Length: 231
Image 1 (cartoon, rainbow, N blue to C red):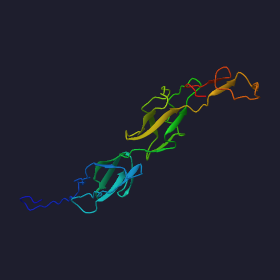
Image 2 (tube, helix red, strand yellow):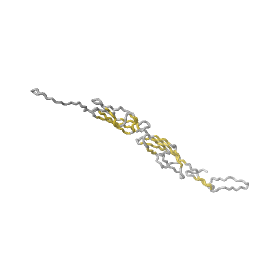
Image 3 (cartoon, rainbow, N blue to C red):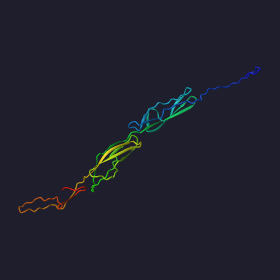
Image 4 (tube, rainbow, N blue to C red):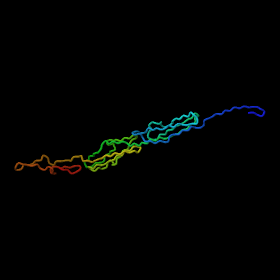
């Protein structure tokens, strides 16, 4: 600094160039995929974002979620990336990967064309076909719920083939169906009771005799749980 007399004064200061601009990072759009066959998830690939900065030295790091190319579980996974420049300025972005379980359960019949034996009153009822003694059901992700179209305990008509549809549902709402048939049959033989045993036939005057008709009720009584009988 110079005055009019030529005197001088001096002062020193400092100017620092500082990076105060945060970096920029752009994530992919949200992704939605279905599960890989037989898996409770899906391998998902994406282009990992790389941050940009007005100065060199920015580093991008994934701080949440899963990497590209690995198995993602069914459901929502949030991937978060953060970029930090050399001056410590930060920026972040996130996107969501949703894996949907779209695979129905698998069901295998252990018994088909089910036969129910009529009881002593010629009656029979629909069995519970949802148990593992009749059907095996598995799912790629979760447990399953098995229901049948004709409720267990429903009275059956003798000799009729009753169609039953089983529905196997998983927790994602996927449903598999299977059809079976149930028939009520009479497997009980008739009961026979002799009124007279060791039948004696008297020879006639020619010393002859003939077999009597033993089918009549004076000799035998026959009964069945379901129907009339032929003797």
